[in-house]
Amino acid sequence: MTSPFENEVQQRLDDNGRNAQLKASADAFMHASTVPKYSYNFAWMGRPVIQYPQDIVAMQEIIWRVQPDLIIETGIAHGGSLIFSASMLELNAACGGPKDARVLGVDIDIRAHNRAAIEAHPMFRRIDMIQGSSIAPEIIEQVRARARAKPRVLVCLDSNHTHDHVLAELHAYAMLATVGSYCVVFDTIVEDLPAGIYPERTWGPGNNPKSALYEYLKDHPQFEIDRDMDHKLLISVAPQGYLKRVK
Image (cartoon, rainbow, N blue to C red; front, side):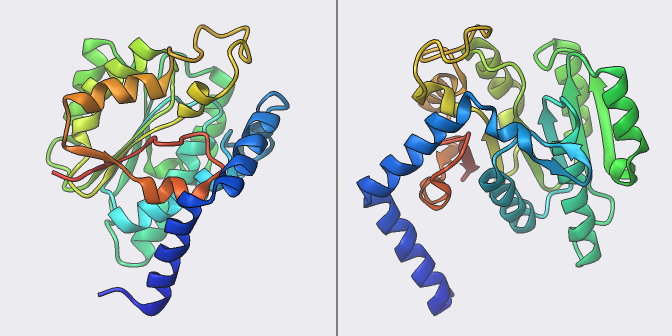
């Protein structure tokens, strides 16, 4: 049973979804803030997190709601997201959640200075890392082995952003997310940004996480896009990327 306040929140989210001016303003900010690398300005417990604050808050809500025993993350970079997830699991445990929950990060290139900083962090006690391509068969098997017998699993995909790579990650890992949990596909915003905004990258409109997500969803009714999350955040690198497993 929802409270009156929760009903008010839902009404605001519904209103946001119909508010063309608000959505246009949010879109304008996303476009204007991408080239200046706005997302690179933030850190979590001392490590660069490379996310928009709105998505950090969204992940906090999801981690609290799901109470995962395992969070799988593809893409490590500086390690801020791993530290964030580990700290959320630490808080969950302190509040009666899973005591031994862990974060598993996968990256094709874990640079030595980043690995050293992650391993020296107090939250490392909840972190495991695998170096290798997230779509290599031997890496996929290692990740799946870690997920076996875990009652609640959350998946976050944030590595190579090409269509083919993300689609392969979705086929490899999405179904590891347990019912009621999420597979979050980051940087779906690439589809909505002007072509050529990433001249040094191979991805762009039509070849990105969102195009992969759409293709994956055609044959996977187990997942639904969490539209409320889009209407709540408005400013996000993952529009339509919060996939909730519903069956």
